[in-house]
Length: 323
Image (spheres, rainbow, N blue to C red):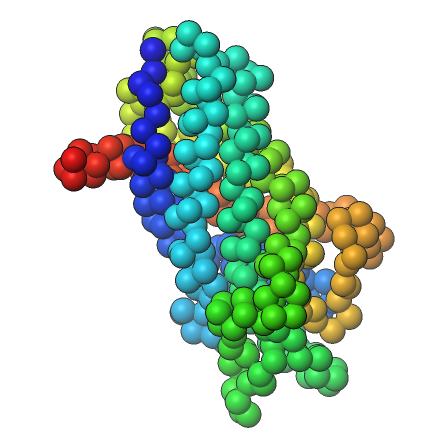
């Protein structure tokens, strides 16, 4: 029978895993956001083109715009997600066994719990990530009128340079709180919930089953028991990529809704239904798969690293040293 979940240890594991994973894959996540937001002028032809142009215009560290927000908030986000799934699995298990419906329900609970942190994190990250795309679009459409100043692009680039306008997460946060209140930071919360709950309902059961492939013990036992590092890593990568691609259309909607500053000729949306209808009408069904490859390339290693670190039990070792 699985050992009782040590919540402090799981929180440490989830936090460390999130920090390592985000640092490794953030540039690809930036490319995903910029590709998903492209509506009018085609600035980037794909992920590699986006990264190359980002380095050219903004320098190497331009690929990490918004990373500070993620690195600050990914610890509680990943900690809540992974720990909540473990707790729900334990509560729903009977005699050490957890049926498929229990795995799905545990994933649903984990996805719901993380939204309280994920929504403001994504909201701030997207504004910072997309600022460079807007600057690049203005370069492509140089004859177009200058866009109306916003929370993100309220400063102009220095004459003779291609540097995009700089904004900080702190300034955006304060401005949102001042003008829109706490609701401003939670813009797109419904779309975030609509994306994260199905993702977790797919990811966690799939990971749990892949993580016991080839093992002789009870397949319904806790999937972390005696799981080799490599198996956890591969299972995390596979389950993450499958779940990521499956919910990409929902991620596109969420990204569009949370983007405050729009480029020339780009739509603004009143809500999830309006966003869906406008994308279908103007861009066609294929637009809902924008950034799918980037998203898979982000989520696969992110969750592979997360599960690998998580199941190595760094939190348990650390608490053991301290205790």
